[in-house]
Image 1: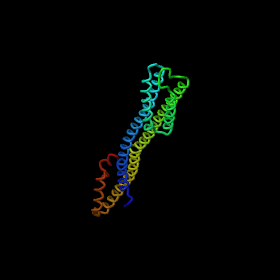
Image 2: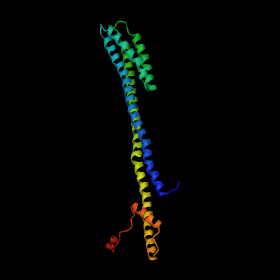
Image 3: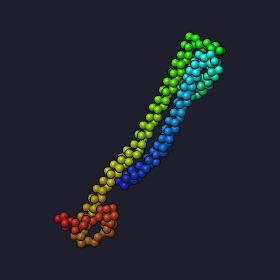
Image 4: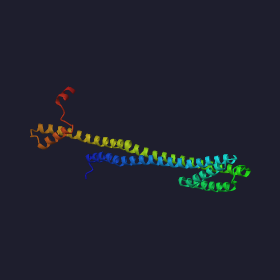
Length: 243
């Protein structure tokens, strides 16, 4: 394979579509994956937040039921509801910190529910109130951890989006312009060479005419090829007008 200008032009011209063929599926898969990851992260973050919020609401209702003389059934129902959210919360956790907080909440809830009196009326005392407040604080920490995971997921999505933007800029903007610059440079060299060939051919034709030798078929073929490439024989009329 010769290292000619034409070969270089062909390589550069082929490189651009090859880059785009590779880049476009990558971008499509990347955008699809990014959309899916955002949706999954959002869904899991919302699910984890729902579990923490469910425990918080159930605890508030337990606290309310403990202050009522007829709140025994309310307390029992909300304890079951609290237990449900506590059971599903680990499956929705994304980090070790969330799982640690959930385990701590489970221990505190078990101790709290164990010290509650079976009857709701008059079932609140200072120790119970303090334990309820501590449990509220632990659940608030879990909600904060859930929000932190959502923020981290958003940051990961932003980084992925930034990488895709870089790939898109390189593949769709930088590569075509680099190819254009390479083709422009190579075609300039080709144009200079063809112009020089035309000039030397004209001088050679004049010398042959002065010697009264017949025009060579090879010279005629070169003249025709140059004409097809856009480097036609100079127009005598234009030369006279310039003079």
